[in-house]
Image 1 (cartoon, rainbow, N blue to C red):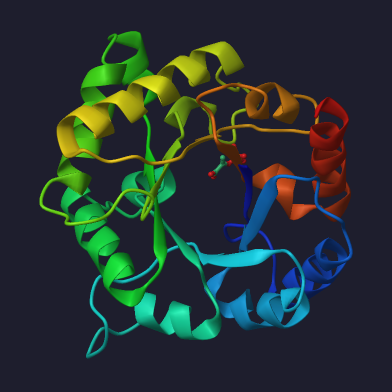
Image 2: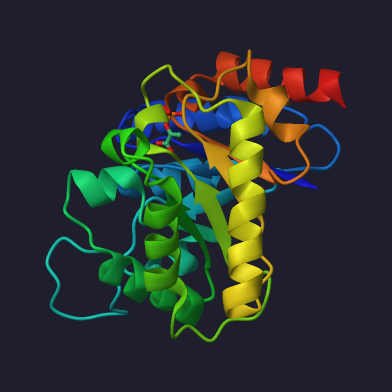
Length: 246
Ligand code: PEP
C-alpha cells in the first residue's frame, strides 16, 4: 500500500477547492493507493462535502497544539478531527521557515494529533545550506529526535514525510534513488532509537513525470505533492502514471 497525499497549501479558495475536490471524487484510485487531500482550513468543509463517500481521505495542513481555549486564529487537532480529518501535517518546512515553527512546536503538535485521534504526518528535511555543508543526516536526526522523544506512540500511529527544503516548489526534485536511501535511513533511525515503525513519504516537486519513480521504490511509502496536486488534470495524470507503472 502506498500513499498519495495532496497538500493544497493556500493555493485554492473554498470555491476552487470544492470544484477540485468534486473532480477528485470522480477519479478511481489505482489499486493499493491510499489518497488524501489537505485543503486550506477555510476550504476544509467544502472539500469534505465533496469527498464524503469517496476513497479520498482528508488531512489538516496545520493544527494548534492545544485542544481548546483562548487562542485567537488557531484551529485545534480536535476541531479538524470533528470536521472529518484523518491526518495532519506537522512541521512542514513552510511552517518552520515562514512561520518560525520550532521542533518543540512540532513535537507538541504531534502529541496533540495523537491525543485527538489524528495521524500526524511529521515533515522533516534539510535546507539548501545543510545540503551544501553535508549536514543532511545531522538535520534529519535532530528534527526526528526533537519530535519523537518523549512521545508514547505505537508503531504506525505516525507517518513521516521526507521533504528536502531545496526540493519543495523548486522544480528540482530529489532523485528517487537518493530519496529512497534517506527513507530507509529514517526508518532505521526510528526503529533503533524509538522502536517505531513508520511509513515514510517523499515530497518535493513531485509531478506526473516523476511520481511513479518514487512509488516504485522499496523504502518510499508514498508521495506528498504540493503545487502539482492543486490541478485535477495533474492529479489524474499522476494517478494514471502510478497505475501504468504498477
Ligand atoms: C509540499 O509543500 O509539501 C510540497 C512537496 O510542495 P511541491 O510539491 O510544490 O514541491
